[in-house]
Length: 332
Ligand code: AQP
Image 1 (cartoon, rainbow, N blue to C red):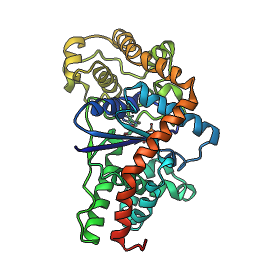
Image 2 (cartoon, rainbow, N blue to C red):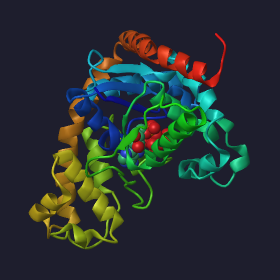
Image 3 (spheres, protein in one colour):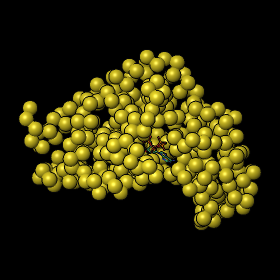
Image 4 (cartoon, protein in one colour):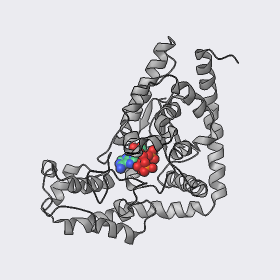
């Protein structure tokens, strides 16, 4: 069976972008013909400073988020990255395989380091190599991600190819990004040119999976739009980034295409469409936030689930890591 790997950083509250771009697909793929491995990538999170107690809390909260959105720890392997040291051990090899020029092209590094590149952590720069290791230490072949992570999965492919070529082997499979759905890039509610992000300083820019019904309704009501009515076909959204974003969100939440949404709602003003969107978002998200809150009442149980997941993950990763070290020429 093909193997799926994907991860999410415990760097803040889960957003609607994380849900529609990634999490929603995780639970679905678990029920399809895949072996599924899902990871809370805590080592990636510390590429930018995290307050230690908040990091622990966010890790447990994210575990609750995975489970509440449909990941079943008895069907999928669910764990946190630092529990499986094989990731960082393989990442070192990949630090020596991937080229500086490849990492220099990564747009996420440019975005996150901003103008002051000299003060970004070195971890932020080499983070894509750790992500390559996350995937390849399981010989995973399918990586469900949002659009923003496509470039990193491509780097993992290049790294697998270069390792195989340099060492004259076909040891690493070449992983494929799986980017599906009508909301693979959910944009900020305040700015249609920026992606919705956990770490955006403005809470009004995003819907958190933990937001209550009032907060969701308020954020959608205040979301930036233009004065035009909804068009009746997707082409009418060209050049209208904010309008397009809200239609895509509606479509993804309703599990229909944007064209189907517009066929039904074309001609509506945003003052009429937004309450419908808010109602749908609340209906979809409130069971998730209720379940997350319930799971968070027993953090020790969450820790047990993650420890059991790490043990299962190590069983898969250890022989693959050992073989990789062997190919490279390490004694032992
Ligand atoms: N806005 C988005 N639309 C669609 N998918 C998204 N993802 C993130 N934002 C959107 C997908 O969610 C998964 C987990 O992302 P991550 O935690 O690895 O970090 P990220 O991509 O950097 O996401 P954030 O929310 O913006 O986190 P911060 O603010 O910490 O950087 C990935 O599959 C991603 O594609």
